[in-house]
Length: 452
Image (cartoon, rainbow, N blue to C red; front, side, top):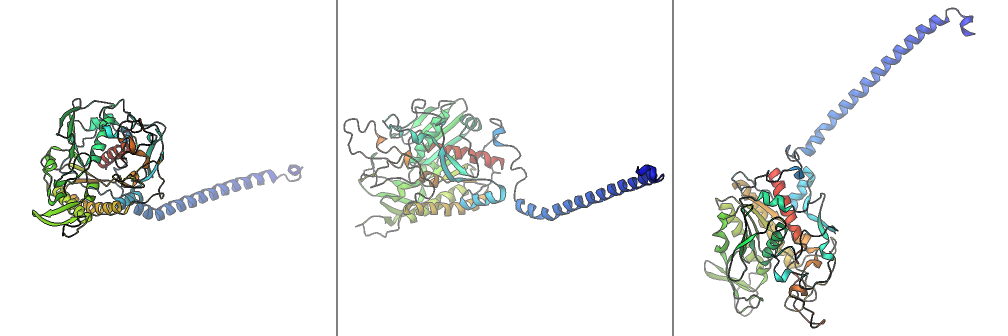
């Protein structure tokens, strides 16, 4: 055996083994130190680029998830310390790249088996023209979609949370019948928590005020289709007896006289500017839109719309009342094979996908003016402490041709004749319907704005 042949081999073996073990440990320790230093060096080298990517992110931006907020914990009272943030496409793109926030106004409609928060039986505030189910619309697929913004999940509107946040506050929707359509949607959702009392309406029931006694919350809709002073010679069916006389330099007293009463407001213009109108400035005729035979300068609806938006934003910026203002963009219609007055219809049953439909020229022109003037106003407003937010519902609404009343703007239109020719409504929205998602956006913007 090896041990018998060399009496010193065991001692030598032990010494060698010890030396080998110590050497192995030293080599291992050196290797570990070398790797550790290499890792730390690598981290130090990479740190500047990471910091550069995130240098604009607010350290408080994500300190508390929205869903963990306690009802009523956020006070949205308008105050002089609020600052304006532009929410147009460019701003949203910047937010995505710099802070990881999503673009609320770009995305698609996805199936939602849960359906709406209310129906025509649980809400009594639905106007007859938008009560599609009661009026006989048989298909219900349009009720089972929800807006899915690109890059994030949009929480469904929480009526209890909203009412708690709005305690002792006042809110107004200022604009045309689309604004009234929107406020009815909000009323229907809120009615699942508390019924509002109607405390005022004008002679034609176009402007109304509701009060939620349990939260001392006041909700108004002010019908002012041009937002400026206008003499309108048109009946409830849209039949005109004379051209509209539109003052481009005088805001409508209907809303500016009440402006100081509102903590929040959603302001919107739109389709009325496409109508025939005589334009006045300094109480003198300056021109018109679509007035053949009048021997007046054709200024175009785009000229008038830009002037009016500039007047509105200037009023908001100069006012010493610091309300929280949303400006909602124009709403596209979906008339096919004609217009509302010439047999146009909207028979589609599912949403469009992005790229399947383009905006009409007039809608694109109008929206471009809105975005341009909003950008200017947001920049000015931020200097003056005005909170001005964009509610850009145009593109997401364009994708919902299935959500309009169509022929069901009236009760049982085909009960007597299945082939009856009836006027279609492809501009307003069924309730419940796609317009309910606008409220999801409103609440999300409110909460995120305050957290930021």
